[in-house]
Structures are given as C-alpha cells and as structure tokens.
Image (tube, rainbow, N blue to C red; front, top):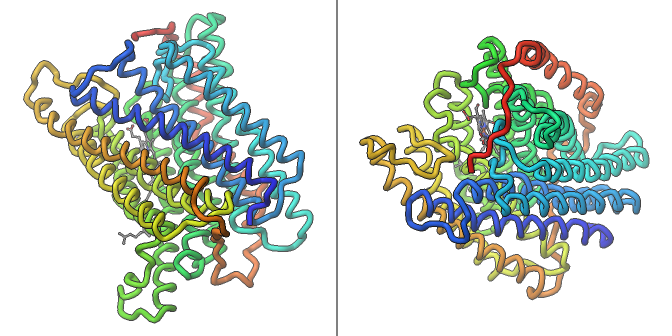
Length: 543
Ligand code: HAS
C-alpha cells in the first residue's frame, strides 16, 4: 500500500496533471477545427497562441506532474513512507511547478509567449515565460531530490539487498531527466533570459536549438519510461504472470540513460551549421536507442506467453486468448503497446537521414508524436489512473466502472487512430505542421488535404469526448465509488530469488559512460557552433 502520509502528495500531482490534460486537450480540438476551417477563434485568440498552450500544457506540464505523482506513489509503495524532510522537498517542488505553470499559461494567454512549446529562437517571448519554464524545472529538481534520497535511504537501511525494481526504474528515469535538463537550463539561463530582457541584443540560434534538442529528445523518454515502468512491473501482475527478467528490465533502463541523450541532432538533420559527420554519428546513436525498446517488446511478449501457458493455453499463439482482455488495467497498456509498433517504425523512418528530408516539418511528425506520447504513453497513464486513484482514495474499481473505462479507452483509440493516420498520410504529401493555413493558393497537391483535415477534426472530437469521460470517471472513482481496497499491482520476476549483477546498480559507472558519450557526440560540434557562429539574431514577434 501507498503510505497514508504520501497519498496527498501523489494525488495533488495527479489531479493537477488532469486539469492540464483537460484544458490542453480542449485546445487541441480547437486547433483541428481551425485548420479544417470549421471555426474561427473567439476572444481574439490566435491559432499559434492556442497551439503553444496545447503543447506546453500537454507535453511539458501534464506529463511531468503525472509522472512525479505516479513515481511518488510507487516509491512509497515499494520503499516505504517518505521521511518528512523528503516529503517537504517534494511539496516545495510541487509548488514551484504549479507557480511556473500558472505564470507560463498567463503569459501565453496574454499573447506574450506565442512561441510554441519548443520556444525556438529567434521567436522571442516575454522574459516571464522563460522564468516560468525555469521554475517548472527547478521544481522537478526538488522532486528528484526527494526520490533519489528516498532510494539511497532504502539502500542504506537494507545493505546488500536487491532494490525494488520500481524504485530502481524511477531513479534511472530521474538520472536521465537530470542530465537532459542541463541543456535546456543552459539555454534558458544563459541565452533566452538575458536576450529577452535586452541584456544581449542577439542570440546564437543554432546553439539555442542544439541545447534545446540535447534536452528535447531524452524528454520523450522521460515520458516513455514511466509507461515502461507500468509495462514491466504492473502489467505482469495484472495478467497473473511474472516479469520475464528483473536484470533485463534494469539493463533496458540503463541503456536509455546511455543512448537517449547524445542523439538530439536527429531533430536538426535539415539545419545548417552542423556538419554531416556529427549528424551521422548521432543518427547511429539514435539507432542504438531503439535497442532497449526492442528488449522491452521481447520482454512483454515473454511475460504474456508465460502467463498464458501457465494457465494451460496451448499452441503457438494460444496464450494470446489467456490475456485479461476485459480488464482496463491491461487493455489500456496493451493498446498502448500495439500503437508503439507503428509509432516506433515511424521513429526509425524519422531518424533515417534521407527519409527525414521527406517528413521533416510536415504534419507526419505531429502524427508521430501523437501515436507515441498521445497513444502509447497516455493510454498507459489512463490505465494507471484507473487503479491508482481508487487505491489512493481507499475505493474500488467496480465492474461497471471497469466497463465504462474500457469504453473510454476504445473511444480514445479510435479517435487517435483516425487523427494520427490522417496526419501521417497528408504529411507524406507535404502538408506542413504548425501552419494554420495550408491551401498554397489552391495548389492541386494542397487541395487533397481538405479531407485529411476533416478526418483530423473528427478524430480530435472523439478524443475530447474521451477526455470528458475520463475526467468524469476519475471524479467518480475518487468520490463516489464504494469504499474498499484497490490493489497497487507490483509483479515479481521469474529470476526474483537471484540478485541482479552488482554492475547494474553501479550508478557512477553508467553515468560516467553516459557523460563520455555525450562529450564525444557534442563537444566538437558545440565548440564549432560557438567559435564560428552564424550571425546572431534579434528577437522577432510575428504574432
Ligand atoms: Fe520521436 C520527433 C525518432 C520515439 C516523441 N518524437 C518527435 C517529436 C516528438 C517525439 C514529440 O529521428 C517531435 C518534436 C518536435 O516538436 O519537433 N522517436 C524517434 C525514434 C524513436 C522515437 C527513433 N518519439 C519517440 C517516443 C516519443 C517520441 C517514444 C514520445 C513518447 N522522433 C524521432 C525523430 C524525430 C522525432 C528523428 C524528428 C523528426 C523531425 O524531422 O522533426 C524510437 O525510440 C522508437 C523505438 C520504438 C520501437 C517500438 C518497440 C515496440 C514496443 C511495443 C511492443 C508491443 C507489444 C504488444 C509487446 C522500436 C516496445 C504486442 C502487440 C500486438 C498487436 C501483438
């Protein structure tokens, strides 16, 4: 069980995350309606303004708050109650994240930060927007301290024992986050804030984008790894099976620390100012970061098959029937996994240098991230919320609620399938992303896009219905469902009795290798960008 003293901490994060999901999701539908020319926005709001709010609220705020809420609950469940000073640090982190979020959203609503969620220079926002981002990140540092120090405390109190897998994975996720955020912190503190305050007149655009993507790619694994935590640790228990291998799971997480960071150039393949050789190296490392996801796919199939065979299902695929298809805790995660097969293939296409030329800056990329974060990750998060919220509130997920939750998941699946398929297909013929008007003066290629835009709006409408339904179900699970004890499922591994190799818990070694790889991939190109910069740019406000 999650310790009662930690319940509030986890719930506050999760609730705030769902507020961000609700507002950000509603804005998403508005965007698809504007693009398909079905509506014009009221209150002098503009397309790029709501696109910025949508990206910031969903990609940066919803994810971060939910992830920490989930990790606090899991850490408390597996390592025991947080000490009061760690809990205090976590609350300070929460306050900073909320203040940062509110300030950032106010700036966007005032139309002083219409710079999209990647805040690419030379678009220039109000300094308060960058300060808001800094607060959000500093908040996560307090949160990270609470979790790492809780994990260290457990290790000291239990010398020589295997650390709980959930806690190990949470720490790996945080290590990845801490190394990754150094890039965005450097850009915000040393470039964006002085430039937006007028202390420096110009900004080195290539440097700012490079620092952003140094952070921006591992950011996507910061979203993915908590979903993997649920796949590895929770799903095997839900299906009545075992984690295929504790050591393999740990190794997969460590490989993400190594390979997820020195790969940011694959977002900049079409940008000048970075030589092809460095792009090539980072593309190779990008292919290395696919490996831990393939290990995860293998591990999931192994857990499913073992569970099915244990229940007596025979034949090559007989075990498939033995999975608990009507249990939302499983179904949501499984559909997320199924989405990740085409989503991962899309990522491999994106990373392939030549094919990137075809899809870069098209709405294909928007399709890619909607089936990764918007399907794989969020479906898993929905599934987590359906057992975690009642668990924290001392209530149960009844059969009726489980059926309604399944319906909500299916609605999301259909909506996301329609929307992201339309994005992928029209992106292939050049439909640009981040553009309100796409008719190119009636050019014949652009004229095909109308039906795709309508499909996106239709998919977006289903998604919004699904969010409404999700929020209602969560309120009911928190407030009105019968009192009782909902399980926090934590699986055991096939190799539970054996200790994983000590090497796997040697953090200094793994962090050292990660830093070495980062230095190899980034030192020379960054030095070059600073030594031989393109002309600096003043700030622009096109909105
Ligand atoms: Fe990506 C752009 C490459 C994964 C998110 N990505 C983005 C952007 C976002 C994003 C937000 O190389 C846009 C940023 C922006 O605004 O500009 N991505 C990759 C690669 C992977 C990848 C190689 N991305 C993700 C994940 C994301 C995410 C995960 C969010 C959570 N991405 C790129 C590139 C770009 C990019 C370029 C830049 C494009 C451009 O030009 O702008 C890999 O990590 C993918 C590996 C995954 C796999 C799949 C493994 C499958 C599993 C499921 C098993 C299923 C089971 C169920 C067990 C190899 C684990 C059984 C099911 C049955 C049906 C039987």
